Length: 129
Image (cartoon, rainbow, N blue to C red; front, top):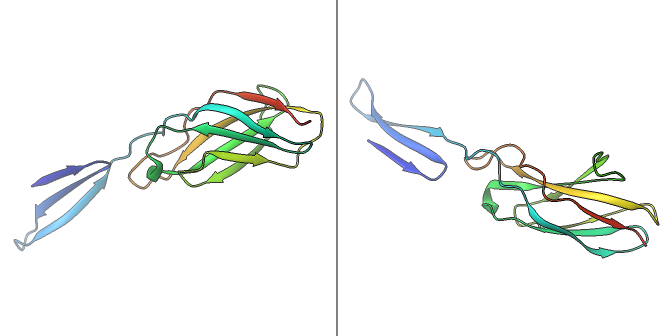
């Protein structure tokens, strides 16, 4: 007998003694979808607050890596927004009067749901004022 549920397959097999045994095989969903709609939601002289949306399964995400740097292709710093329901992060301390480029990646929790990192979100840029 075999039953399939989202994220896992459970199979009941007969053992040599005739008693059923339960075996399970976790089937991952692959990488989570990329966060979207990233934007700068607030600025100060030493911080930027970024916000984004996520259309995936919150329970299968450990959190989000928020990467920022001073060029659009070199992200020098990564911080972590913990939890699948996180949708914003304050980046601080930053240098006043500097433009920063930001992107976000979802991190799967590997517990029968998503595993690994998503592709990067759209990029957002903003300057500390």
